[in-house]
Picture: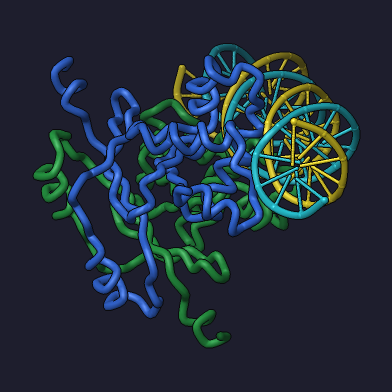
Length: 138
Length: 138
DNA sequence: ATATTAATAGATAATATTTTTCCTTAAAGA
DNA sequence: TCTTTAAGGAAAAATATTATCTATTAATAT
């Protein structure tokens, strides 16, 4: 029995094919898809699946700590099954969102505590620029 | 003729009382209000002003470079008339959003370029923690 | 394998936020 | 003051997300 099965059982949640597929898809991609994008991606295999199911599932996955929510400044949210705190970078030309791999800025939390009276727990860092593909096209 | 008047004239935009009030309000506050909050705050002085006017105005102000948009992870946007790139911190207990003053992390842009092949232009940094007020109440 | 039961899927309606439309009003310049 | 044209306000529309409700199905026990 894998982790996912155990975790769902522990929480009295049912590991349905839809939920499994959504999580697996999020694990498989680095594209940080929105609910709509997940829905479209899985439509070939789950033609009857409702968009509401995607929303409900990502919410569940977030509560389980299996997925995190991003907001790069669009009018919707994106989702990432890599729940480690890590920065993202957005191409302002084509809109793609990439992880900034191996760059960990955890020390910024402490630094911010020096500037504020907050107790700092976490952060979300979004960088904006032009991706390699789009640089080539200029 | 002040800067604002000149800038509006240059762009063939009309500096209406509503626009002036919205900009002045955003300049006066550090609360990073949403459109709804701006609308409520100005309602006493502009009881007939439409919420659509608030949305249209902040969009105009953003295009003019007078205001920036924030998204701390709520389901709406917030606005800041301080257009310098500066980090924000969100209290996960009461929801307030503060500037992190004097903390400038411009050097992170260069650092990120070392981790990616992006040309990095700017960033938005959101920290999450517990504000002094809420710490007291625990 | 089957029955039981409780959670979930899917369809749909509802809600919330933001944008658009359309007509009237008013700012800016002549 | 007059003219022009951008902008305001009201309402509808568009988007994204959440909630509701019933039929289905996963999980467990039989």
